[in-house]
Length: 474
Ligand code: FUL
Image (spheres, rainbow, N blue to C red):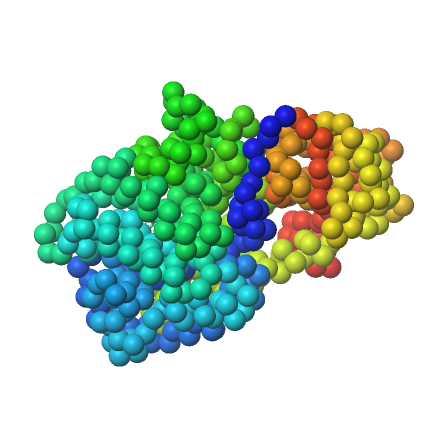
């Protein structure tokens, strides 16, 4: 059985699971979501930007990486690019001597946070947008960002493209041929050459795909594999990688349902990343201060993204001070407490575990794991005393591919086993909500198309109190 396998860079990316987006530009000061491209660099003037403090917040929130909008669609550059005047070099901030990319990438390195860059292919400021001159400019900038700022873990290419803009004063609508304009094979090669370990995101990859919505919700199931034939009808799956790394990105109306769920029969390993903002907008708007996502909502999104095998890219828009707003920080930290509460409640250690095939004694080691002897595997956990279990956590050894097709969960109560949940796909991590209940045992039945290889099995409590009267100790 030839299952698609992740590359080394994809495997490293899967381990991150939770990291942030920082949307910051002139929009922060104009109260817009998409700048037109005619904004003066003079308006970019954060009063209290402190990269160390921002990265400390990200670190304390338990995030593993940070992706900065180095240039959004409006074209303003947060670093003093050698190729344009439309940048922080002409802002009053730090008397034109500032470099947000430098400060944040340095601060990330110091705290062990991975750093990533967002560089918008669409540029509503550049006079040459739509001509070959702009492609040269875009590539020069990509080269700058991937050589001048240390290690990059992810390069994010946005799908939004073409339309009206300032374009050096032309104030017109420009449309480009998305199938050819960016010459993606050669453009992407810059990243491969300069940052061979970095993953590249776009709607269709080549390393990480869009989850098909901006709500942070992966499909159930969400396969890390996808099939070229369905994405591009009539295309030979063998040419999928070529097409994705080629000129097709952005050439099609993203098949959002397919991206959301992936495809079990897919010929390529192309996992989804679930992106969402902590507020309604991607950029900061004072008017949205009372619409910050609650810790409970973030926890729910975590179960529906990380808990379905994707990564969660949560946007934290700095305000005009250049700070993550206090309300956002509060929510982030309470969300972290919920995750910690869940992970700390793992009661698998209290269970006697029996596997009907494979080597169960290897299951709980740091570096060892369980591989079934057949394509099915049943893991039965029993407790001497009843335990409260609300979430079953399972991880596959994905370097061996996504082997498990389907699963069911049974609980032991009143001396009988009852099926409480069934579904498909495990992948990098699955967090299955079965509702808090006191049980004498939990059984997991797995059916694979190859022998299941399990890296982790955990039994957690849901850390959110259903009502004040049933408060738990967390
Ligand atoms: C979209 C953009 O148009 C939004 O402004 C934002 O950057 C989001 C993450 O991607 O396509």
